[in-house]
Length: 125
Image (cartoon, rainbow, N blue to C red; front, top):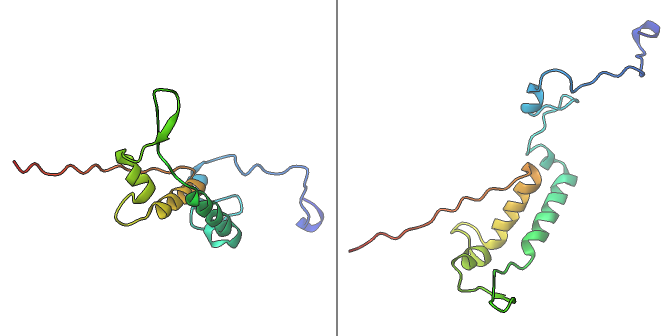
């Protein structure tokens, strides 16, 4: 144990990953601090990195292309997805905000999922 129980032996460290996986599943780390997708964003370094990467990716030009028969490609501005990806994916977001949000989710959670809800106009016959 050491002199008066003050000093511990460093040659026999304890493995903090042994045992139950429940602390990891609930967001606790070996230090005892809770870690989830929001706590790192309270650190200015993490927040700044996520913001810079998300804004940089969202500001890149986004075009939709189709292949031509001669092997080349051309912009597909008449494709139904062009307006959604290039201009406005929904009524609440611009394309920039949408792509910035997707990149933020990708950086913090490791994945980004987008649900496509297709609108079918009612048949008035």
